[in-house]
Length: 390
Image (cartoon, rainbow, N blue to C red; front, side, top):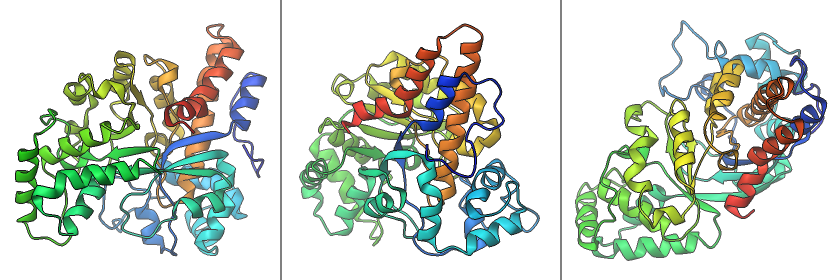
């Protein structure tokens, strides 16, 4: 990790020396992440951006600085903005607001120590950095993940005839597979996982698109379970990794329908078992995701997003993620979006949590230090390198 105005492991007690050095220096692969805001934002938009669930304005009686992410920003990002750690919220905001977005990115992103960002380039209500800008501002390489629902929605918005939709979508998928390293579905948001995962026949796809087109909207939103099953199976047909949002997210998601155990009918299919399936985020279903990663050779998972939002308490989440799943089936992700603070803090909290948990096992004689370093490298970079062919 790039040297900065702090030691990423500061305050942790008795982390074995080699493990500590590995945790500090490891060049991560962030296998699911988004870009940073391109335009300047005001304080309200800033605070709203580190509240994952609510889309409402922040109530007058509170500030999002009084949250785990807010405390983590003031602890870890403040020194890089030229102010004291734990600086008051108003002082932090003033220091941040004095920098242009690209300057802020260049100030924070390199300290995340990420060698490769695997970027979801899907929808954003504000302009965000594309892979080229992310690489330039962070110093890391980038690859692209393509969101399935956006491809389908663009086809319908372009006036595709319902009878032509299925073949046109397969063509779009094949073209995307030529430059992307994988696909992502947000079926958790659109229908939930408890749908019929049988590949639909062509006539059913045409009928579903006909119903969809009849809604007459210029910004169509894919919410049909038949079409969700279709686009997922079309992606599976490429053999490229498939990312699936699981668990925690915005409040328009029905959290109980985003439990990955509901994906069992899909995961039990022989054709799907030939494709890497990566369960993203997973909190609070990280133990269920760990079970699935143990049960299916092609299933992987991460705890991105959750680590940022649990902040100082994220060590417990990290420890629980290491309970049952094989270590070759876990990957690092920040799922940072918009704020470069999230890209940086995701890395710091993960390094600290892994060093603390693995270090304790080494001290107690449960693990060797060599094994702890090896597992840290596997989850932090090696597994993603293998799965995505980076």
